[in-house]
Length: 224
Image 1 (cartoon, rainbow, N blue to C red):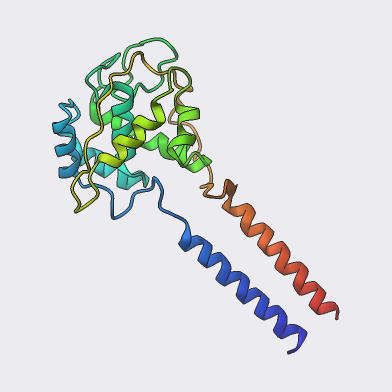
Image 2 (cartoon, rainbow, N blue to C red):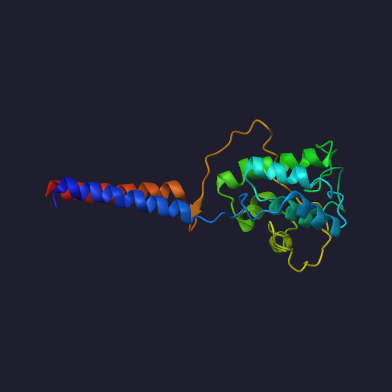
């Protein structure tokens, strides 16, 4: 086999490796066929006696628009305000942007709040590498958060997936105080690159290192 053939073979192997990595990445908290539909979301919230019941269509639609599993948005509301039953301020079931105080609500409706929270969970969290519930907690919730991960996880897992019934319901726990959030990024925040990770390493770094290794191998073959 000639040096040129070796290089082409190496390039083909690299392309196949990158394609395999891309397809093997788990959906995680992204929107997927398993995400619950509007009716399932409303049924879950109704059983939780949540004032959010009835906006399942909006929650599902925003989830598709911003590529986020709606179970994450609903689960955060569960952990923060018991699904809107114990709110610090109107229409803010997610305790979004409190900074240890309870200012007037930034949202005129639950639908507006749901869209804002969903949008910036994508732009300021998932797109920046905070793509697990554990990682989101460290940016979203700063104090009084000992049970935050377990509550969000249990509520997320208790919700039905599309076409599947809900699992056994976890106990509902009333938050003891509004959570302290990081500053709201605001509508002017630029969208960051999608930093999917493998074992905590951004995907682009893995690709770059793979390209470097194949390039070094190709150069050594060419010099023979």
